[in-house]
Image (cartoon, rainbow, N blue to C red; front, side):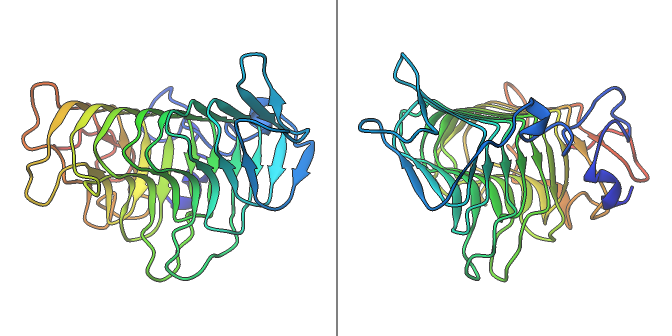
Length: 297
């Protein structure tokens, strides 16, 4: 299958009955939202004080932002903020910075990018959350940055039904469509389309940059392709990282960019060995000569 055919994945391939996220199912219009307000310049949402008219302060003290186009970086210094049907095209390094540790953030039916180029070697991000809890990113369209989703040692994170595609690359960058630094608990990455045409790093990249265990992680029912290795699964170079309830299941790997999914393989740095509560189950080739066949551990 050609990469151009995966621009709108739909139901093609061997994933019978499964509609993978695409431009048609993500972003504001897919959720019935209309952009009604444009806000220029960098913005900070603070927990107290006077808030601009594009922020709704709810009776419980939470905040909702609906149908707003942002051209600068949005920094969330308050917790419990929902972005619904918004658009982000910041010219800086980050579109949305989630910056309150106790969090409670929802980004749903939003569109990110394409972001204008930053400096060479500067990692631009759609969502940056360096150690934040309780995040949901759902049905968003993300493109034009090196790291659409960048997480530190975050906990209780749900990434579902998103379309991550056409990342930007400048010399010296690392192209990681979902980057997680390590030492995480309760991470769900499910039902996404994640396409990285670059011949380096990956689609889902779980590392040990913040050394520590991966606990209660589910990577399930995603369509992925590209990178050096399509998935980096959280181990360190010595193979001694700790995993518990770490499940990789029902995923589909495409050969639209590289015959091995990624340049080298569809997975690397996985738990050693698999077994117990750490499971590799029913992962398959989406297309290519082995379409529909199971992927080896």
